[in-house]
Length: 332
Ligand code: UT7
Image (tube, rainbow, N blue to C red; front, side):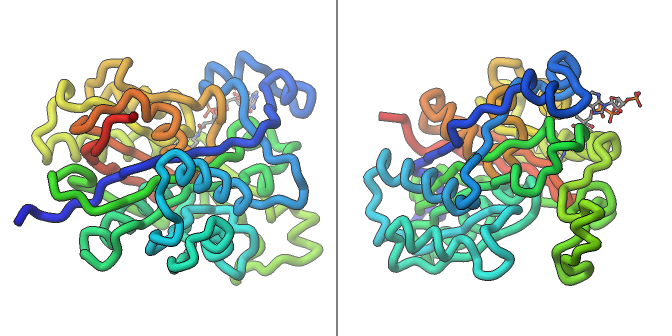
């Protein structure tokens, strides 16, 4: 009997309608379109404006898109994993609410948080559950309402992030397609350089933390950039080497969309042709847990059964890694 692998069998996505362009940001902070475009590759990002809607709204929309397109019966989903850094509430897990809302009434559900690598790590988790033979349909959603934790007077962060969600269904595969290999890494040195300081057990929220803006994301961009460039390129190159993949063997690079220059540096180390490097950062900015599944959703029409996809991410923590996955279907 062939080894059971875990393949992605359907994808979905959602971004809110409201577009926050570089031009509008110019009126909010001391920045300009030229700086943002050349330093990051971002032109605009989507923002969930409704004050009464949280990350669950985005996640539900992405999951519903997947369900509608694939025809999967939500009652047959065994498990819902929500990769997110911006849960609706600290307690209870947002995934549980999402599962109920989409009709995944027989599933168990929980959240998974590893900053910008949440979805990549979630791919490993989802695949492991499927490969174990214990569960047959695992829905992995990556969703973040980054606008809820961004200070729109801080030009170092407000130009980067956007809101969005994407979803992928993992199922068993007996043709050897799906997840082939992974390199997942982390280093606690990173927590000084990209963080929300207050609101957790170390520094519970208070009037003082609010006054100090410690409930917002703070990033030492230059330092994070340095670590991101070298680490993301390292693991992507290594996963190719250890699977004997030359640059011709790789069909697509699905890289976390944090900065166009980081993606280009990774692609260059992998010696990949530009046409294989999938990019949508110009439209959405950095949607944290949603960048990888939004790429899958936007470019699904290009993928052919058997294509070799290399995923790569780097994020706060620090957390980073690379996954090698064989695509399992041609889009109908
Ligand atoms: O997704 C999670 C992981 N995160 C990342 O991977 C992000 C990694 N970091 C980055 O992408 C980049 O560091 C940034 C896009 C955040 C910043 O780009 P940079 O090229 O590293 O710029 P910098 O921070 O070194 O700043 C260069 C200059 C500074 O001015 P001086 O000191 O040279 O006069 C900044 O004050 O640009 C200035 N600056 C800006 N100017 C216009 C910083 N932000 C802005 C801005 N508009 N928004």
